[in-house]
Image (tube, rainbow, N blue to C red):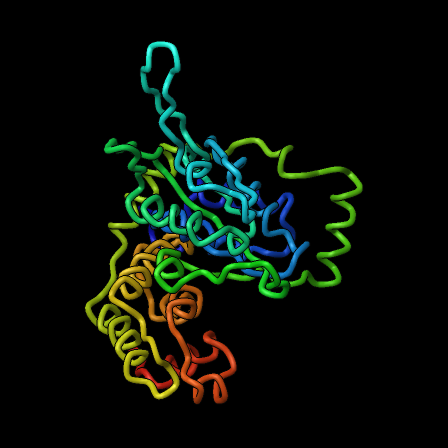
Amino acid sequence: MERPGNRNEKIDALINNVEKVIIGKRRAIELVITSMLTGGHILIEDVPGVGKTRLVSALARSCDAVFGRLQMTPDIMPTDITGFTLIDPGDHSKSFQKGAAFCNFLLADEINRASPKSQSALLEIMEEGQVSIDGNTYILPVPFMVLATQNPVETYGTYHLPEAQMDRFLMKISMGYPSEKDETEILDINERHRSSTHLDPVITCDDITALAESTVSVKCTEAIKTYIVQIAEKTRNSDYIRLGVSPRGSISLFRAAKAYAMISGRDYVIPDDVKFLSKYVLAHRIILTPKGKSACGSQENAIEKILDEVQVPV
């Protein structure tokens, strides 16, 4: 465990490597790595062309890991994700053909374009880390992470992700447009044909597993645990929110805060970790009332209002 103020060298190496092709998005990179260290999954929602797919590819290639990609379309079948049992027509023997999920980092590009049947195939994978086919259970590699993207603007021909599936994602984040300076640098990188395929691995799967295990040792006081629970409880009793945060959301925020503290070079959680992560971890888990839509405008703003109402521990 790193002493306070000392950042982990492997984490910094990973962030710096990804930043070679993802310019000006350090916060998004740190959030994705936070999810990775908790064993959680992440949904990246933003307009086309801002680097969602490239971020996922850069992360996977920076790790000495197996990268799988699915372009989610209406004709994607559940077996494309999970795999299927193949019967030999000669001797009638059975063999399991692995699907795209058998990797360390699975990119589900434009997840909301897949049918609900295919979306549901991800549920057991994301929650249990395994695939069940024809009475047999197949364990997925470790680490395993689903990184899904979706475009919130173009909704024609898409299928809304149900709340049960949204709750499986540890975080929902956005990339956002780059600044003028960063976009100029992006043009230079593009001119040099520098892409994520040129990145060399700087961390192994064993390193990721060890770092994830280290987050357990990060200290979190009872006062901060109470703070997390009070935030979740407030979402369940707000006039602005019809569906509040479940205990899974509280656990996710707790685990994310510990991982983010370690990324920040601390072996303890501070209230600012919880405040910063709350909108990324909790906003996609709530449903607003008509009053909430009018007063807040978005789920993220509703969480901000909740944070203003809950006393911060000192």
